[in-house]
Image (cartoon, rainbow, N blue to C red; front, top):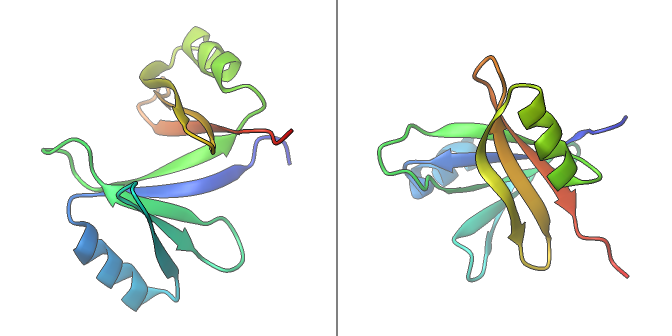
Amino acid sequence: MANPFVHVELMTTDIQKSKRFYQGLFEWKLEDVPDMNYTMINVGEGTGGGMMQHPAPDAQSSWLAYVQVDDVAASTQMALSLGATIVKPVSEIPGVGLFSVIVDPTGATLAMWQPLTLS
């Protein structure tokens, strides 16, 4: 499948409460990433994800889906040309990859992800 969903991220207003809830509800394995204030979610089979404290203090908790693309900069510009709003411009997670966050013309938020290629 071209451009699959590859990661789902919870931006939560209470990280500890979210961890307790999702570990109790599902058999997810949660692993804190050192020096990142980020928790990886290992679901076994299927698309995994992560969770983090929501960066906007007055925002509600929400899930964000990531779609893999070959060129995040080009895909972000294409989304803009098709009527999207850029919420987070192309940014790097050092040593991991590049991402951007858009809001489509109907108001739905989506992230695009380009993993770093290993040489």
